Image (cartoon, rainbow, N blue to C red):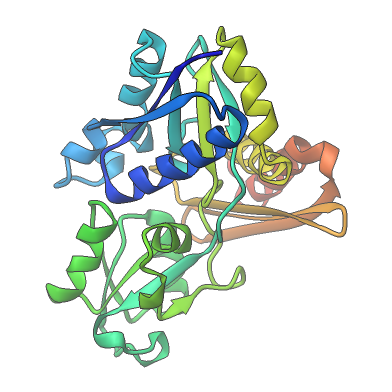
Length: 296
């Protein structure tokens, strides 16, 4: 048995909270092991004056952590699964995913006003093109302004002239900020980012000891849903440059999924399939959107 296991994570309040959740899960299986959290400052955390699509996309949050994992500096990498690129680097595998937190997006308003009371021309902060397109579809009179930074930095925008910011419910819950939520978007109002609310635990392919341990903490429901959602992204060819969203959930033993993609308008598709056909469902919904939008 490994005496010490090092978990690598981004150096932000949310990332550390998520690493602590991963440590708790690992400790339920490896009770005798010391589990240490190692903080890694990524390029995505250092460059805050540019939007993600201008500096290489969400993969910036994971590359340096993956490098540390490949070099053996850490044993487990913890990522927000929505930040992970389609392809896994050679030598690394997805060890486990943890139980999904609320996958939806939320609005936090300045001065505790209600979302419905936001005035015409209200300044709404979000770093996500996916969120921006869907917010403007709901209220085209808003002024949606790009913001970057960790969850605390974004919330501070409410003291700097912003009327509201849009954030993931999962991040607000994990950092104990959920009491600030003014409105949680319904799936009809806003399709969340694929894999939002899911934590991914990445390990070395050669680490048979941790592979075995990870199987015991892997959440089957979340694993199936991320398979469908990532299959959608892969088929549609989406990255940070293209606003795309997807949410899968298991209902009465069947897998339901809704997806969206924006070109010059919002395109949506939804459907059901068996749990065993998760990847096929994601692919089929992407193909339906491609047909609707004449996307090659």
